[in-house]
Image 1: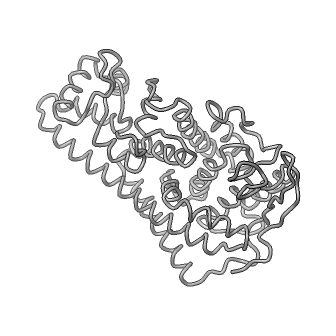
Image 2: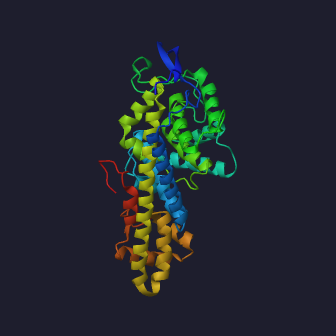
Length: 391
């Protein structure tokens, strides 16, 4: 559908150039979304996929065992879209204060993403609303250390930015001038709170993501925070009990189409094509998440069965195995602290797991050794490894 009011352009001068910056119209779109039978069916399928995903999260014996690694997998994928080279294993090693084999700024950026998501979810759990204040808080955490820490963390931009190109004059897209940012974000906040009208949660997430990307309210970190906004919204709206849906891999895989559809919305107001793409992303990603959870459950069950044949030490080994599901790269000292087992017992258990080819020592060092639950890592590492690296 051609819309006459997807937004408007204003002329602004930045870096010595006069350019046309785009200011989006407030949400929801006018005229209203054209809910064809095909589009409505696609959203029904997406909601069913989310329902299955939410059910799986409820069936997991301990959701935290899955979420610890799954959230970190998403952090890796989302940051890879921005050009980092970290893998899941790199991030886990970094969190254990063992430097990975990639630039420190890369893995710091991924770690910040996890911290920003944790901060947002914690604030929501405390009853704090999904608001501009919360987004600024999360942005401050996202850019707290490493690359981008000098790019006004937690503050809406006070200068013009642009997307693509080497300068504003040859940019692919110029977002609103800085003087329009607070107004645009205030309108987005009203939409998030169902003003002027109620919008179904999944549709709200789809529309809000584009609006946030179009406003590009920060000097850096907009892409990562815009993707986090989707998950936060679905949790706030009660569509998901746990933060189990992340679309970064789908957006990364279909990068050209993703950016083309964002431009199409801005140029013609074609929200329907974007909504179709978004629904497909949810259907595919929710299905992948369910499959990953099921693979991890099967793997853990198979490994518990093997451990059960170890005889009298099986009980202690099972305790070690359990905590390795939560943190699949860990030190003996951390495992001892989590299980309450004596260090000597933990080391004995790790030797048995190594002999059973379930665990591998990953540092090659005599001291400060770390152990990786390799089969678990292989499942979680799917699609996160860069071509030049392997787990």
